[in-house]
Length: 98
Image 1 (tube, rainbow, N blue to C red):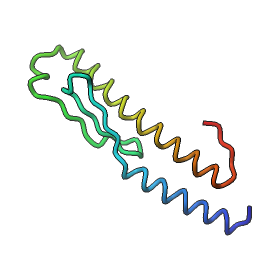
Image 2 (tube, rainbow, N blue to C red):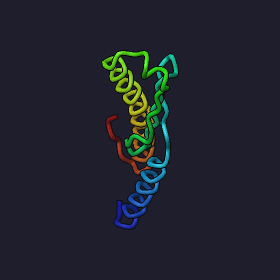
Image 3 (cartoon, rainbow, N blue to C red):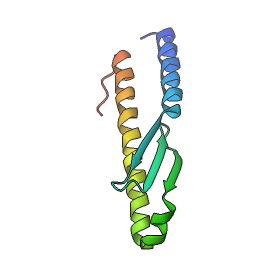
């Protein structure tokens, strides 16, 4: 692969990374009382908690619920990012283990 092809691939990768960072992945618990939104760059965009739920649940259960929902959203973002990265690598002729 020559320098020009590498530069094109690098630009393509940057474009995909920028697009992924704009994407949002959402998760919520079964009772829909906790919701988290994570961006493709793995930053938490928002966490929403039903105010009534906060009043009725024990703090340790609330903490566990928040952690679980954020982890679900992060996992969705991670899977999507891996798929896009693998797709780009294949286009570049690379065989990356995922």
